[in-house]
Length: 162
Ligand SMILES: Cc1cc2nc3c(=O)[nH]c(=O)nc-3n(C[C@H](O)[C@H](O)[C@H](O)COP(=O)(O)O)c2cc1C
Image (cartoon, rainbow, N blue to C red; front, top):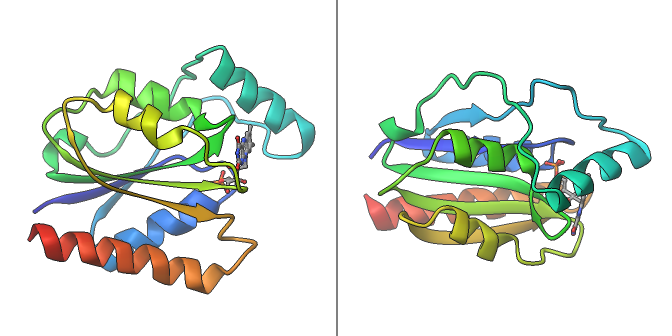
């Protein structure tokens, strides 16, 4: 079974979980990056991010170096922004519509996960969502336990599916 971890991360939390999952499962990794640099500090990042979610924006992405269609199982991760997924992931979904895949969803947040998984399930209709898991600020809070949580989750899914 070919595995790919796809993620967007502004501040590194989702990146850390994505890399932990990829290391555990020997999956390839695909980092989603915007063409325009996103303000990563202070109030501007909230303004840019929340506006993007509310206005349903799809910021342009840098070219992807992996084709999700070549894989059987996709782990897809995002930070929670305004109770939803980050807009770069929306661009990814629009420009790389995936169908018929097994998908495991993960997200990082500050305590209010909101409807992120319901929205992602909707956006990835036509695929089999096999699991979802969330992490509370893993860079700041319980880093090692969160890495173990991510790895155990991924290991369990692979065992089930292989
Ligand atoms: C624009 C923006 C909106 C956010 N909205 C939420 C939210 O609705 N709920 C929440 O719990 N955290 C929210 N956060 C916090 C992030 O989800 C959290 O810090 C996450 O760990 C960041 O992941 P990253 O480091 O991979 O970017 C928001 C952060 C930003 C920048």
